[in-house]
Structure formats: structure tokens, C-alpha cells
Image (cartoon, rainbow, N blue to C red; front, side, top):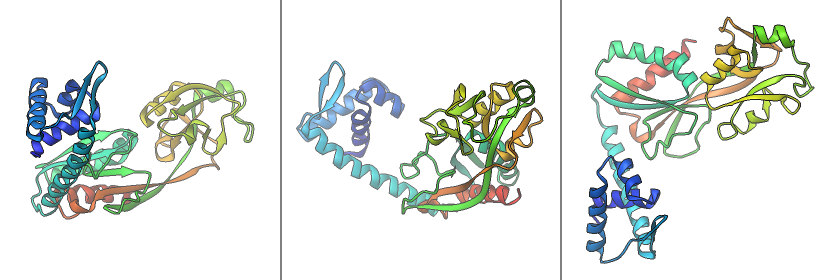
Amino acid sequence: MDWDNARIFLAIYRVGTLRGAAETLELDQATVGRRLAALERSLGARLFLRTPNGYVPTPAGEMAAAAAQQMEQGAEQLQRQMQGIDERLCGVVRLAATDVTARHFLIPALHRLRQEHPHIRVVLSTSTQITNLTKREADIAVRTLRPDAPDLIARHLKRLHTAIYASRSYVKKRGLPEPGTGLKGHDVVIYQRSVSPAKSEQICGESIINAQVAMEVSTGLVMYDCLQAGFGLGELPTHVGDKASGLVRVWPQRETPYDMWLVLHSDLNRTARVRAVADAIIAAYEAT
């Protein structure tokens, strides 16, 4: 099985349409169709049933998918290993983090890195979703969760804390909540369940059972903006909320700890440009 055709087959297998596969691979749809036909001819088997709802794998297609996925894993491992012996301080490094982490830690660190190594280009993706480093969705990730995959290296960066905040105007109008009341009589801004199931039911250890949910958000910066706008009470990292002139920290004695981790694939640990970005991030957290 030719790898170029196999990766096109896998894209169709995963998304179920020629158009979706073409968009994923950044190829022309007609090219994807021709390559699939060529693969089916070379194997002497039909790999998909063409249905109104998309391409459904045949039994032969399921067998081919298993083989193609093994080829994909081998190709990814080879690429990581080749990158792992690259000693050049130039090229692309893909970095994944949340928007709050990027704003308060990564952007200043990467700006300093840029002055020292101007030929390293960082592709920074901000999302609350966990990126798959094994599948090379990113080279480095900064996360709140320590991975358990044996092929990933995790470096503890810092223990941070969250607390409850509200705008000064909100507190002036609605007052402060009473602990243990489920935030009765107050409005709250929470994270969507798909982002953080625990934080959709409580904030900083306090149940929101008696509160009115004013807004559900998916990112930390939107949470920050909603609290500044006076939507209600919400949870923010203390290094963000304490510096915000328009916010008041509710119950200053209460805060919740969390840990930040730098994660990268073990095959990339000795790649010069990846190591330089990782070191810049580590230095940024150590300096705070």
C-alpha cells in the first residue's frame, strides 16, 4: 500500500466524505477521488460503499484502515525521530495552550525568544481542548493536566490558584454572597460542561445550585470579559483577577490550587528549536 494513497484513504475513513477529506489534506476533491480509485484498483477490493450519507467502509476497508493506521504511526515516529536529531535553531515549533496562559505567560516569553532566535517561528494555537502530541497536533503543550502517556515528557512549571471575582459595579449593586448558600441570590458565569464539567457545577469549591447562570463561556479571556462587564460572579486565576482594576476578589481567604505542566514528545526533546521554546517557557514561569 502506497503511503500517499493510504493517508488519503484514512482521511476519507475518518470524515466519511471526499470533500471533508480534501479539506483535511488541503487537496482538490477530484484528486482525492482519483487516489482512492487507484488504491482500490491496486488492492483489488472495494474499500467503501458510497451511500447518501457518505462513504461507509466495507469489511475490506476496515482491514485496510488497521494497516493504514500502522503505517501512519510509523511515519509519525520517523518524522519525530528525524526532528529529534535536528540541531538547527530555526524552523517551526507548534505550541498549544489556553488563551489566558498565552496572554500572561507565553507571549512575553516568546517575544524574548524572538530577540535571541529570530529564525524560530512559533505557531501558537489557543484552545481549551487537549492536543494530541503523539499525532503531532503540536510539538509542545502547556496544560493543567499531567499526561500519563509513556512517550510524553512532562515538566512541572508552577502551582497557581483560582479565586472568585466580580466587577466592582456588580458587588456594589448585589453585595457579596454568603458562603455555603449555593450563591443564592447571585448571578454566575461558568464554563461550558464540554470545557470543564466540574466548573459547570461549582466555582472555587462553592456550589452554584441556588445561583442564576447568566453566561456559559468556553475560554478564560471571555470569562474575564464577562466578569468585567458585570454579568456576575466567576472563577479566574489569581494572577489574572488580582491585577484587574475593575474586579473585586470575593472571599479572599478562599482559593483553589492547580498545576501547570509543560508537555512534549520524548522524540522531540533534543530538537534544538523545540528545546529553545521549552526553555523560554520554563524561564517565564520561574520568573513569576
